Length: 257
Image 1 (cartoon, rainbow, N blue to C red):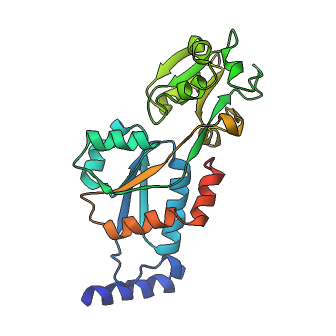
Image 2: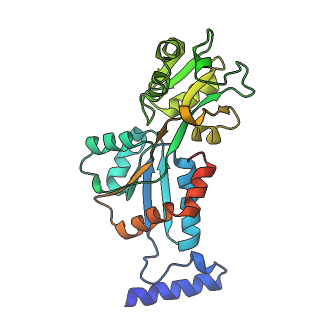
Image 3: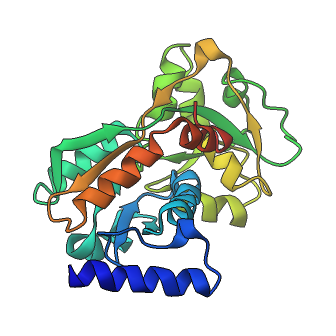
């Protein structure tokens, strides 16, 4: 009861100081509640935007840490409430590697995103299709991991293009972060088969070649509450928020289906 009264007084003071009612903690909600979210860089754009909106609307702070797993896994083992993946297999691999951290029963799927082709601004090699990636002189960067494992091969295999595209892969890396660094440093790289969503994060240095619907390949965006979370209720509240139609529209803006 004392805690509720204390929160109530804080809420009153915040309103008097000019904070909007949406930003004031609700009764029964700890003032210092923070939902800690970790995952790869690919889905960061929409998740970070929605975390900010969720905080404004509920007063519950959400902190999103994204990037290659090795940069955040030690901290995530200490305080993560939510882990998200860049594809279904990616989160499954994470669960297999860290079985103590995630609960399969707490896993849910958000939205799917499609693969496309990123090219240089102005598309100087006039790449319009997967077939164009087999042309002589086209240099491709491949991410062999980070939710994109086998992505180009799955796309090419359906059209008999594996040999031609394989010949033109100039370099393979393990993460999108490495691919981005290479893309910015080496202007001789012409194309990257990846998710369309990366274009919206790299609009200043890429153009997007969308594939015809019959050629597209989709992968999911799974999310899970951790076993050790002390904020399971608020973590679930945030995940429920991510699954609303309003949130779906934000994901679509960032390149999801």
